[in-house]
Length: 128
Image 1: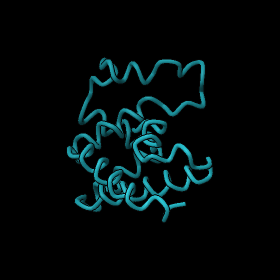
Image 2 (image 1 turned 90 degrees about the vertical axis):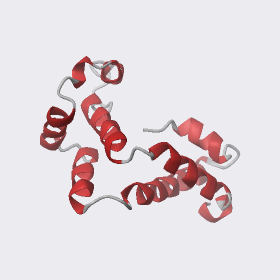
Image 3 (image 1 turned 135 degrees about the vertical axis):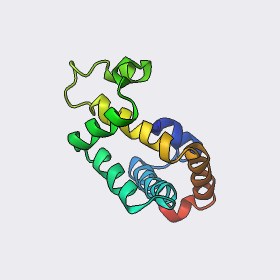
Image 4 (image 1 turned 90 degrees about the horizontal axis):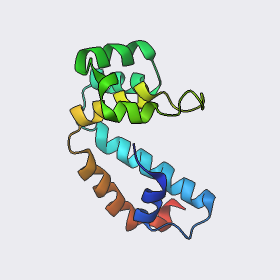
């Protein structure tokens, strides 16, 4: 859902050790998660957690209800590339469902990401 290398650059943590970078990125995920979930109902939050956790039944049901032709989308097809060669790759339907879910229920996702980056940049030393 985000490019880790790009996020490291945005946060200005390129000179930190890999362990320190990981600490900052973990905190970023926590902070962003908090922002994303603050306006969600318990049912919405549970549904999203099921999608993120890879509950295939929930993923299939959600995609069927919200984007039944998802396999035809260019975004999905791009995500699905290389899956046969790399079975460890996160399944494309999971990534696609999570991304589409966020776009549906948190349309201001980009703004929230930027706000968390800005907030963290001011306090990077605290996250080391």
